[in-house]
Amino acid sequence: MIGLQERIEKHIEALSQFTATPGKGTTRLTYSKEDLQAREYLKEKMREYGLEVREDGLGNIFSRVEGTLKDAPSVLIGSHFDSVPNGGSYDGPTGVVAALEVAGLFLKNRLKPKYPLEVVAMIEEEGTRFGGGLMGSRGIVGLLGEEEFLRLQDKDGVTTEEAMKRIGLDPSLSKKRDPKTMKAFLELHIEQGPILEEKGIPIGMVEAIVGLTQLEVTVKGQAGHAGTTPMNRRADALVAAANMIARFPEIASSEGEGTVITTGRLNVWPNGANVIPDKVVFTVDIRSGKEEHVLHAVEEVIGLIEAYNGNGIETSVQQQLYMPPKAMNQEIISLFKEKCSELNLPYCSINSGAGHDAMVMSEVTDVAMLFIPSKNGLSHCPEEWSDAKEIANATAILYEAAKTLTEAE
Image 1 (spheres, rainbow, N blue to C red):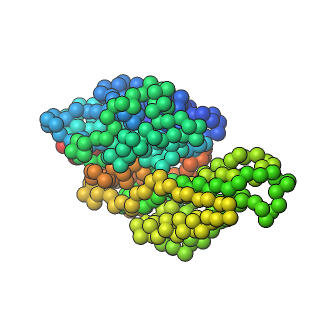
Image 2 (cartoon, rainbow, N blue to C red):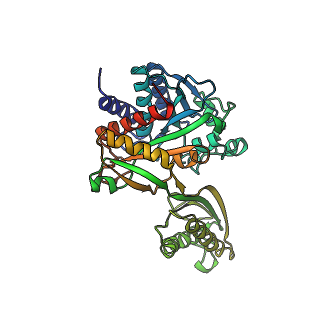
Image 3 (spheres, rainbow, N blue to C red):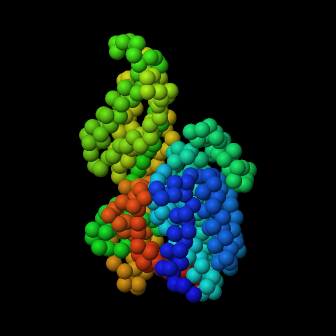
């Protein structure tokens, strides 16, 4: 029988094949053909390992090792399996594969947990298709309501409900989960930065996750002919948007304390080479380790955007997501540290500059995260890579911690 490291390598390699951009990284949008392929692979492996499998009304996948206590809350382990466009093979799937292997080890070693152990593979963490991000976990904890979920559309006007039905999912199933059914949530993730690799340390104990918000800004102007409309008679939506975006780095720098502001997506209409743009929609991602800096930066950004109203320009701002900074559960972190010492694995404390499903799950249950090194600190690109040996080491920590948390014998 092949070992843990080899199984992890095989899973990640298999999942990397389910991409809309072969040879140009992983592009796996939620409820796409590639989502369905990855979903079928994960469910097949879960059943192969002897796990019960179900999907909820969001399309999150759950598999379960039953506990001996009646109606006891579960210890959940997992991450997400969607991607950014032309991303890597490790962001998300690493945590799903590790969770699958933890459950597999429970069954292989015939452990009998008192509290159920559940593997969860979540959808739309990245927000690439429907915006906002963290959709699977927000639905589970009730931060994304049924009506809001059904209103969401992708850039082509396809709703979540339509997209789900196209791949055979049932949006009428329950989405929110009773918090009383969750004892803890554990997530393994690649660091997506250079710290662990530079320090030569294989395990990062995540102490806190950065606060973040995502805004969608719409700027409306007036279309016109590029050659016949004088410069002083124009209401150019793209020029207005570009001027706003150019000021965001200045706002982030003045805020300090590690505050960052990013415009990652920008769409222009009518998008003709010889037409003055009459509409621009762009995103603004604002992050900081302290909530007051996130809130103040949002206020400054909105104030700047609103200052452009007038002279044929009209702006509007919609907040798609807001999550305050989140501290992880110290008792579980202590448990992780104890297991690292037993396994002779060095570790260090680290904060996460990226948002994760763990920060959402911390709204309703005890949560902890582990990071493993990312080669050259790269992520969200085809070059993203982490060593399967280090994933296996972190999986061993999760396994030992899960045994304690489920009181398995």
